[in-house]
Structure formats: structure tokens, C-alpha cells
Length: 236
Image (tube, rainbow, N blue to C red; front, side):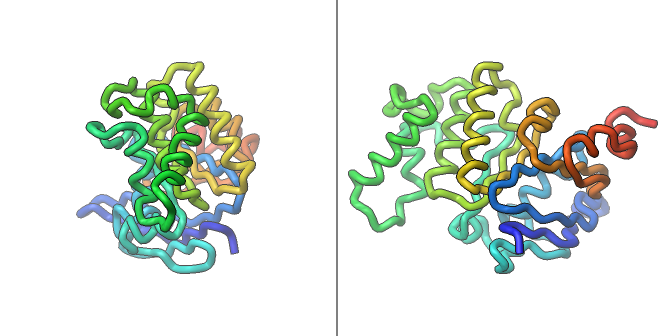
């Protein structure tokens, strides 16, 4: 079984079917790009996987265990990390304290946890700002901070929702390097982005959604030339 398996996922909001039988599997070390126009169901899919939404039908397996409908903190404990389109940092907490939040229950000395947080901030090039409040960071820096916080518990599966949106090109390149490092460490990566250049560079496979359904699932070259994908983006 793959690290993450999604089978027949359905999510409705009243009369709107946001996800309509979505199914896919993602393996350790795989970067699965998820594309689609606005409203295709991409973020809803991530919200179902991480427990923010409870699916109306279908199953989600992580390492062979069913996690469908579990609370977000229980799914996070099992090894799923997540970032958001708009970073959800703790604005009135320091960068160090932001990173300590997901590891507070670890049985480790405070000094050990602080050193791990400092090492992560060093990796993300934020170490000089470690005592600043998160609200003092730029938008791009907040995205790096959220990514760092996500990585602190060493998740098996990470889901990145529009990490490159509104970010300076230099910072985008750095983020791409970090995502490549996650995959090299055998982490399963789900990547939503409207930046198709980055999606095509990073992804070993691409999942295309339209109106809540999977319309294509395959390698980059196959997706680029898929008539259904072209029509969804450009119209018939």
C-alpha cells in the first residue's frame, strides 16, 4: 500500500458537490502536483485529508490505516503536515515559539526542543529573526515559517497549498529546493499551485481536477498534452 491512499472521496456543501469520487495514491518520496482552475476542489481535497472537513463518502488510508473523519490533531499526530494559501502563523508569538507548538508534547528537555527549532529556522534562513513576532515577517517569510513549523514533527505526508503565490522569485527558488529536499527524505508531498512551471518541475506525477472530479492522472508530459486538461483551463 502507498503512504497515502484516497478512494472515492465525496464532499458536498448543500447542493454543491465539491469532490465527486476523487481517488488516487501517493508513495513515499513522490511529489504529486494537484492542478485545476479555481473551484476545482483542490483545497477541499486537502481539507478532507487533514481532517478539517469530514468527507460524505470515501476513505483515506495513511500507511494502511483508515484516518477518514479523524480530528485534525489526530491526523497530524499520525504524520500529516499542512500549509495554507494564506499562512496561519501565530502572529503574536515569536518564531521560536511558533515552531515549538507542534512538539510541546514530546518527552524531551526544553533545551533540546529549542535547539531543534533553531536548526529548522537556520535551514529556512530565518534564524536572525527567531525572537521576532511572526506578524513582523513579510508574507513570503511567513510562508517559510509555516513550512518550518509543519516540518518540526517530521511528518510522513506534507500538503502544500499555493506555496509560491505572491512570493518573490528568489524565495520561490528556495522553496522549490526545500520541497525537493522533502521528497529526497522520502516524504510524500502533495503540491497545489497555479504556477504550472513549478508544478511541472517538481512533480513526478500530476493530478488534474475539474468540478470536483479527477480528469487526468499521470506524468508531466501526458498531463501537458491531455485534451481534457487543456479544455478545463482554456475552454473548448
